[in-house]
Image 1 (cartoon, rainbow, N blue to C red):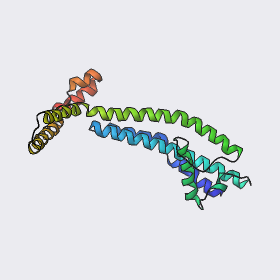
Image 2: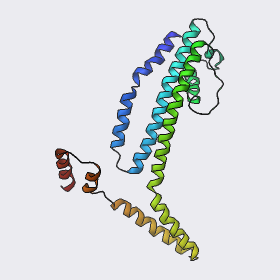
Image 3: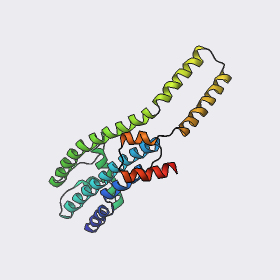
Image 4: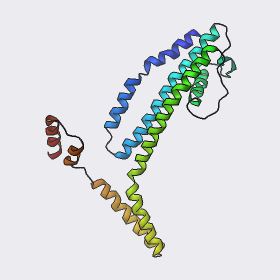
Length: 215
């Protein structure tokens, strides 16, 4: 069982949190649309929370396996898994339930397991609150992207209803409206002066951007 613990702990060396965060940031920087940026941001948040739970699951399994080797009762005794992948799934399930109000049938048995459980709950208290706040912010940003368009659609829908426009004509109106909305979205561009008002670029960077933009 010690060999199993070592194999699982090696996963910690393969997954470098800092490296993954750098990859996520590069992906976000390469996004060309605001919609894609927000969706990638949501995916990155989920990936980070899953990675954190992976580390916790590995630690939970390692503590249980170590205590079981010493002849003590552990959470592994109450687990219905039969192999290492099954134990990992149970450990990951336990880890996720510490962050959410989900149910699970595993609980700490030994002193070491209970101590780890307390630490995990404290980490989850801070981490999940931060995660929930950022998730809410990303969803609000996603909704605000279409706020103006939604207001226009409400007015158009009210116009069709108030004037009792025939169904066939209303469908034509909506078709033309959506075509022009897509065309306007494709043609809308951000000028360099707007960017400079938000981000004052150094001279060398500004020169390179101007060369690329106006060439």
